Length: 282
Length: 309
Image (cartoon, rainbow over the protein chains, first blue to last red):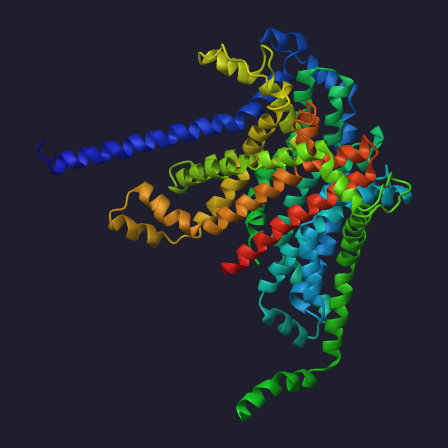
């Protein structure tokens, strides 16, 4: 029951630090397994035939072969790419111009417009999608790329414009004034000065929207019903109906559909992080 | 008195002095540059939500509609299926504390910036990139009651083989499976929000606490947590909005709302009423209920963010 001397105390401290470090790494390893397991499962199952899946062992390329034979994967990937990129372009066009107008030009009613855009951000998709569908069906926009592109753009525009507005607002006013003195108009200030300065925000919007639109099911399901226009996510959702209980094929399809978004994520991760936390700025 | 007057007059004088072609151009450009986004949002978001409000008082079938007024709402709230749906949404709320606490704990661990923390951060954040459809397919394999099911083989290998729950097959447990999947999916997003919050804390505060002899647990509870409270609120509300309005794809693939109405939440009910039952009016009424819920929660969030300013 004597109090430990100095070196003993140091020993206890080192020991405690080591155990806590080991425990931390153990916990992180467990979480890593939980987070990565689905990816491993998809990979492993996709390289088994249905029989091998039930046996629980084996390796085969049958599933991959069947997947490309049964589904127009290439075409669906192309549709997804076309729709996603077009929607991002529309969103960027309206959100950069709108953000510049609301953040830097600030005319008499711009505050009201900004409030309306913030409110539009809070409309849940399911609450407006039915009249949207009926409206666009009346206009004959269903089963055309542009119908889905318009809907995706409208859904993404409010948050993108909000982000752009707050971004432009933080840019120093002197930049504009200096350019105006140099004889540029407000229009050319936007194209020559503001747009290049906004590149980080543009990247953030593009990455956020890419993942959102690429991964979406509902809009594709409603507005692109013909197989020729299907996106990869919608195509994936139809696998169980066409190949009942072919689980390896579901996993192979999942892997194909997830890959592009995962690659974009891995490359542009930091922009995504910024976009998520920028939602907190006023 | 005079100085006040002068101060009040100053902006007006200045404005008049600057009323040059440039000021007019600025206004014109401002309005012109707002038009595209205003047109897009107005025609494809605001008009449809207005229509939802209008049709919520009718017995719309997609083509014709008759005004039935508030009867639409009383009917809806007397509909036992709808009551089940609301209960399901309430049950979903139970997943929220877990979806906050787990990533918060892991964020604390990563925030010590131990070796390799960036890699862990990327790995845990990765599911954010994966679509709900993919997640739902994997979740089905996880909860599969057959020999190949992941949960089942996990239980078998840990000596719990006598217990083989089939969560997806029962009306009162399917939603639990959806909630577990939801917690897994939002883990990374919430962790990133917390880490962003923790990175705003000055290192000096930690150093001061260490000098005062505070242990890492004390630091976590007394210093880190209070300083990132704003971020926790933000994550909570984002998760709530996700739980209420972003799980459609997960539910349609994982359970299709069933068994019965066991895993039908409000957003799924709207889709189902409109596109499988052709009750567009009922869907619109439920759409207004969802809108009011989500809108109120979002407003609370804005208030919280502003009040801490």
